Every structure is written in structure tokens, then in C-alpha cells.
Length: 182
Image (cartoon, rainbow, N blue to C red; front, top):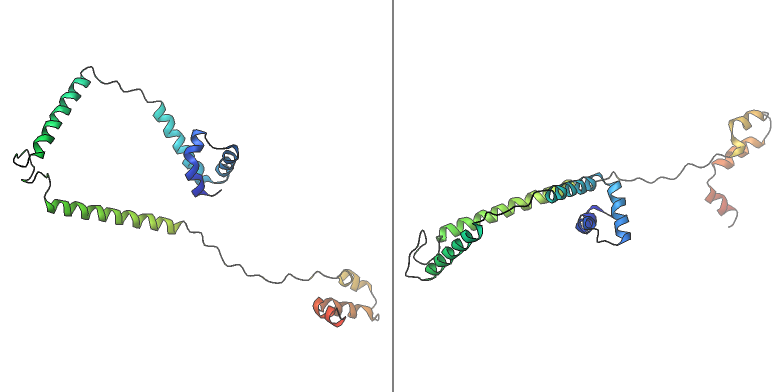
């Protein structure tokens, strides 16, 4: 499991609605990935904090004040829909903003979206892991047990066998098999 899949399934993991296989995979990923383990800890602590907050009790007159405010807002909305009535800071067309305000607001939203996209993309580039290139080489041939220094030293210098053993050890195996007519 990778970090992206872990974060996608994390809500279900916290709610304990995943299958047993997924729960085991999520737990294994938590043990291996310190970043996801920190994320899980932050989420669980914030949930614990939210669950332990005291319940908010509205005042006794809240419902009455709410109904009065809603009636007032409905009356304002009805008066704004009538083009002949001018209320508060609205223009003669009934819109609270001028076209210049809309253009400035749209430009601000576009700029904020651009900055957000730039920050998100730069964060993605920093997470890219670049490994050093791997260079493959042939393994060193195993030394012949007959050509060990102890074996060569124990043979008298006049024996003609040890130079032949050294030459045979240095001959590549594929040449020897080609000569033998494989």
C-alpha cells in the first residue's frame, strides 16, 4: 500500500468500515511510514478533541430572535426583487456590487487559484524520489580451490601442474565450452 491509497481510505479506516484485509494493510503501512502515522495521530487527536467538547446550548430567546431575523431578511429580499425600490447599498439594478467589483473579485479568485496551484505543484516536485543510476557489472569469478595460495605454496616448483591450473582458472568458461564443441 502506498501513501496515496492510505490517505484515500483513511476515513473508512478511522470509522472501522474497511474489510479485514484492508485494515491489516493499513496497519502495516502505519508501522512502516512515519508520515502517514503522524497524519493518523493528528486526525485521531482532533476527533478526540471534537468529541470531548461540551454541547452548545442556545439561549431561551434564540428561536424567537432567529424567526424575527429570518422575517426581516425575507422582507429585504422581497424589496430587492422590486426594481423600483432602492434599499441600502444596492445599485439601481438591484445588485449590491458594481461590474468593477465583480471584475476585481474574479481577478482575486483567479490569482489565489494560481498561487495555490503553484504551491501544490512545487510540493509535488519536492516529493519525487531520485535514485542514483545502477551500473551492472559481471561478478568476479570464484577462485579455484586448486589455486589457493596454500595449495600453490605446498607444491614443489618443479611440478608442471600448477601453472596449468592457473591458466585454466583464468580462461573464461564460454571459451572453454566453445572449444569443447558444446
